[in-house]
Amino acid sequence: MVTLNISELEQVDNFRHLQSSLRDRWKTIELFDNSEADIIVVPSLSIDQRELHKIEGCEHYEERLLFSLMRLRNPRTRLIYVTSTPLHPSIIDYYLQLLPGIPFSHARNRLLLLSTYDSSLKPLSQKILERPRLLERIRQAVRLEKSFMVCYNSTSLEAELSLQLNVPLYAAAPDLQIWGTKSGSRQIFAESKVPLPDGSSSVWNPQDLAAAACDLWERQPTLQRMVVKLNEGISGEGNALLDLRPILDLAPGQAAHGERLSAISDRLPNLRFQAKQETWDNFSGRIAELGAIVEAFVEGEIKRSPSVQGRITPTGEVEILSTHDQILGGPDGQIYLGCRFPADERYRLQLQQLGLQVGRKLAQKGALERFGVDFITVDQGNGEWDIQAIEINLRKGGTTHPFMTLKLLTNGRYDLSTGLFYSQQGRPKYYIATDNLQKDRYRGLLPSDLMDIIAHHRLHFDSGTETGTVFHLMGCLSQFGKLGLTSIGDSPQHAEDIYNKVVNVLDEETRSDNHDFPLFSDYTFPVAWDGYF
Image 1: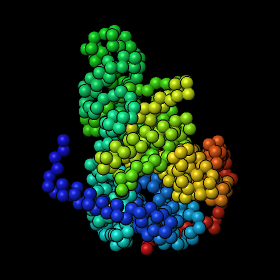
Image 2 (image 1 turned 120 degrees about the vertical axis):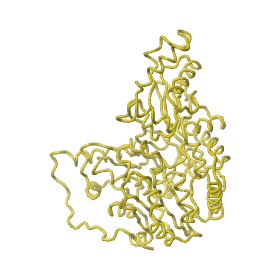
Image 3 (image 1 turned 180 degrees about the horizontal axis):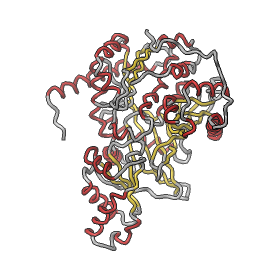
Image 4 (image 1 turned 120 degrees about the horizontal axis):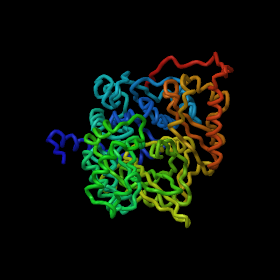
């Protein structure tokens, strides 16, 4: 147990007191179209940096919260967006041009872009705290009684930043982040009576990991595989598969406990890692730093990985926001690549109910704002699906920005009775989204090149039909050949067709023998990078 000294306890009390002010202004904040609000967006990925850098192009993931710029469609909202390094002006132009009914210049004048000009491998929040003049500039830009701060995830760094700015943080307090770890998730599932795979609590060394795996096998003698998860791994990159099939002759009932334990210990260096270039030497060291769990691998011929997203308001209400079917990849389908909205109609209402159970338990513990729950579902062949929860995310995740993009573009509503999203025009909307459209042939494309391609092939989102594609992670494109996109359609097939068209166009435009590039010599960029209120 961690013991806090007096100053730390005082800091926690001060943070809680500041955060409690959100309850008084919550109704005003939620009056989206006409309320006054100053929003400070700090898209810091304040997670273990070694785990984070397993994700290629992660230094550009601060762009994932750029959907927040669409909040500027409210003419009384002002927004500060801080990044480690400056964003390309054409990326900002792209988002502001999506705003329906708002003059570009009006929105731009209510946006303040700030940068630490620091590309080092440290969380953005830490970089801001290290720059007192930048902190002062943010303080001077906001109206304290009308402001709040949002982030990617909440740690002591974000809490300190909130206190330094005297601006409440709309996110779960740092001391509650335990419930978003692998072991904390399992405890919440058990307390909220949500089904979950058999597994262990946290272990902190390979010997205890082997013992936990052996105990799990003895409880579940028919197991063929197990998943080992670093407690704070992200996007499945901290997962590894323990294959028991080569040692089935040592299964419970066929060999002594000691023989089984020894065989599992010998198998650990041969774990099948989901992250590229992961090794046992590194992974075993991370167990001592982050902790790990072992969990039964859910087998199934027809298997899906859906998720449900919700939020807990400052007044304690739990709301379901969306459901998705996740698109997974990697050696064993453990790594998050993208999602489809909504989840399959055969189980999405069940997901909503389970999400509510988890959300209410989190609310009891004091959690706030965004939460997501990942599941494994297996078709039982009789019209029923076995549903088991595997992880809670107390942060914004890969499904956050596509759904918020849809919501902010259409100003629509999510219908709990059907699990569908309806635009203001009454049309149900569907999408397919990814952070991981990545091909070597895309390397070298600048954000401005992408804009040319979007315009030339009319790939943009059409506000009239409320269909089309919205792009993100454009900063990843040139160096990593990686891009994010959300393709919105009027049916699941329509959304997929729009997505496939984008991929086909990008493939064609980046063929090595294609030199027929669209040229727009009159295309100009704004001179200034920073706007002022």
